[in-house]
Amino acid sequence: MTIKQVPLIIDGERVQSASKNWLDVLNPATQEVVAQVPMATLDEVDRAIDSANRAFKTWSKVSLTQRMRVMLKFQHLIQEHTDELAGLITEEHGKTLPDAEGEVGRALEAIENACSITRLQLGQMANNAATGVDVYTLNQPLGVGVGITAFNFPVMLPAFMFPAAIACGNSFVLKPSEQDPSASVRLVELAIEAGLPPGVLNVVHGGPEVAERLCQHQAVKAVSFIGSSHVGSQIYKHASDYGKRAQCMMGAKNHMVIMPDANKDRAINDLLGSAFGAAGQRCMANPVTILVGEARAWLPEIAERAKLLKVGPGTQRDADLGPVISPQAKARIVNLLNSGVEQGAELLVDGRNCQVEGYPNGNFVGPTMFTKVTTDMDIYQQEIFGPALCVLEAETLEQAIDIINANPNGNGTSLFTSSGWAARKFENDIDVGQVGINVPIPVPVAYFSFTGSRASKLGDLGPNGSQVVQFWTQTKTVTSRWFEPDHQDGAQVHTTISLK
Image (cartoon, rainbow, N blue to C red; front, side, top):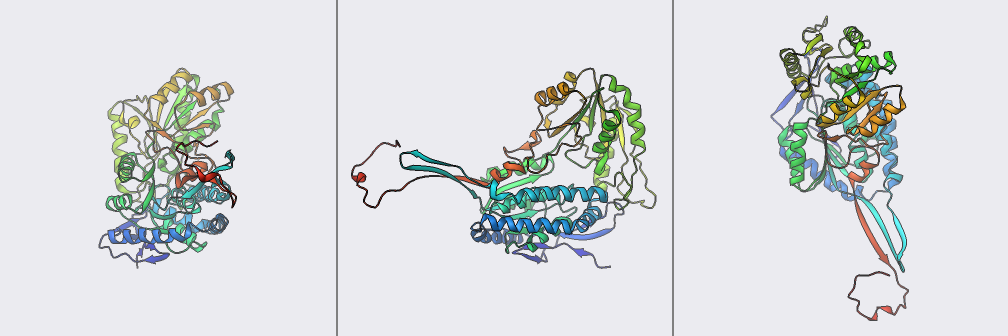
């Protein structure tokens, strides 16, 4: 059987890479090789950037209305191709088809936000700021933008980046994860089909060498990254050293606080879904719960319900979670879970030796749950990025808030309660960028910005919402005065800078 070779996209065309270094893309449920992806040569990276740089000169002059119309067509194509995109996600990432379909839906939200560019990219004006003088701002595109994405959302993460960047008048080079690139490439092809001119949107694949070239190239003006803290910190430093604008959304250790007055069934089910959905491979998952007061008595029921969750291949629609992305990821996760046992946590649910009938080679890790977890344990300190839940306990809401605020990460957190007073106290006192009240995964709708904080984010501006336009544009301020044709007041030299 011929193995699909994932293309580069340069100047609007699918390009067969000349690279001699190709990686296998594996189906996580079977280890079957489903595609091969090239590690692009540096010459190919330069060609993609040069193509984007040439395209910027004309695309940046295209009207806001025309750019919006391309985004509207793109949005329509995504709706038409949801099943195809979800199938590619499941085949290469492993998440369940319903979860993959949900990912495409969240990508649609980000694209729809880009369709609002005609109101988001408006400037400001002060008429007669001084006598006969008007002052106004222009929000103009930067130039070539770069997006570097992680494996866990191969459609949603690129959609957080290039639609808004391109709608603002920039051109773009995307480097998706080499672990599951096909859905990202298909997303780009649909954007080109929607009417993007050649060179406006390009794709290259590769590892650190490619990322470094993208960050240092003179024509690149801004870099957006979503992925691990280790890589994100390097990307941010490298891009900043070369004078690029940069935003890096990175790792997390999110907490869900459950108060005793919460709706019990809803809180438990939402906790399990947020902790174990997508096999825990979400930066906005809730791998830690803090049971407050009498809610601590719910612990046995939480564990029993966790044991009922079904593990299977992503194509099995009744599966609650699929495999993790790779054998290496599984080994790392299991090693961390082993450390929890070794360091004294009590293992209530053990998914380390999960077996799925008919899929002996799958990267399956079952729901795993610890209690008696302390904040100095590795399973609490590190982002497991697998289907593992750590349970902490607190006497009061104040104690729970103190635990969360002491953690260096600030991506997301949730509180489940029936008390408006407790909810208001939580949202005001918590030092975390994204807060859910009776919402387990508080990723904002796309017309609000993604606002992770502290060690989970580098850069002032996040994806989506109004911040995304601020990131992908530069403000130019114009101070303007016009004279009558026979104006005579310019006969004298004025050495002051005052305007009256």
